[in-house]
Amino acid sequence: MSGNVRGTAARILCLVEGGGFADAIIDGTIRREGFENPSDAALLTELVMGTLRNRLLLDEITGKYLRKSLERADPFVRNALRIGAYQLLFLSRIPHHAALNETIEAVKRKKGRKLAGFANGVLRSIQRDLGKETFSELRQSLPLHVKHSVPDWMVAELRRYFDGERLEAVLQGLSRRPPTHVRVNPLRADREAVFGAIEGEGVAFSPHPLVPDCLILEDPPPLTRFGPVREGMVTPQDAGAVLVTRTVAGVAERTCGGGGALLDACSAPGIKTSYLRYLLPAWELWATDVSDARIESMRGNFDRMGVGDVSIVKVDFSGEVPREMRSAFDVVFVDSPCSGLGVMRRNPEVKWRIGKRDVELCGGKSEKILTNAILCVKEGGYCLYSTCTFTSRENEEVVKRVSRATGCVVESVGDIVPPVPGWTDAGLFTITAPDLIDGDIFFLAGIKKGGGARG
Image (cartoon, rainbow, N blue to C red):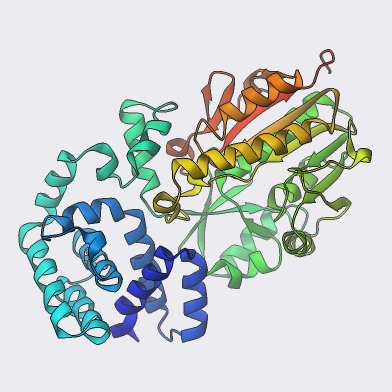
């Protein structure tokens, strides 16, 4: 199978260019084609994801050896060139002759000798001209967005939160493979039992240095086949998502220390909801989503993790809110659908798929959702608005427009609850610091609905 990995990777990248999602296509390909050697499956994942994460830089370098734009090349050849360049420039453990020969052979099998000869000439020119030190020097001379393969308009959005060396560190992190974070689920087992189960699987791990209940796994097997995940003792959840959930729970405790009613308005697949169930045992907890399939996914996760006593209701918060839910909750948490740019390490295709028009559409939808969610908050209660993105149109603009329209007040989350390590303040708003937690980017805002202070 090893001789076909490069060709399979190029084919997957073509499917991603057509609108597919890389992780789902990779998983389906591995299951369907039956990779007997686990290292082949690992290489396939590395080639696809690594190429996507570094695509802008790879295109810049490869383009220097082309007479016409890389985008005008045959799609399979274009992606094979990216894969070949990625191996030459980033994967030192793969011998260059193997990377070149098998990539070129994949082009020959798929597209014939002529295009294979073309690919051979380009890749061997890159090999000749760019040794490790030369590549490093060239990379440092490139514009920031090219060097780290993040579109320039996205870099401008990130600069609102991070600048200078801090911005560079964030961009570096966004172009790297993310660590594997899982959250301990005390609803199934205590920490000692969880640690023993992970060790029993032969997987090394360490507690996250800043985020309680979050563990970092080293080279685990696919998590769908990982015993502690299947048994619900841990669940995949990024450190940033854990921080968001803990902060929401902190605001809830500040609002009604003895317990109250909390609505998770866009809850599927229910991973944050399951943590809220543990963190707020005395609270009435409701979980809603718009999709039957996503609600079934949430029920499955709740069963796996032993989550009970959650009222699950199908509601479309971009439409009409059921009358019985209005002014019924002390706290409403809105984890709004968004562009997903904050999780680009895990879904790197979003960098090349999402444009400003998409961001505008997402922001408009979020305004509807947040406006309706606030209807469900009691006077004096809080609505917590969160996204996994960093654009102003989906974040600050949504909160400011909706708060003005509804007569609510935006309050700094850091003023409501004690500051939590791992957040970066941005005026009234907060965003997770990916350079500090080695995690994804999440935005969070607190909105108070009228009334006086509550203790």
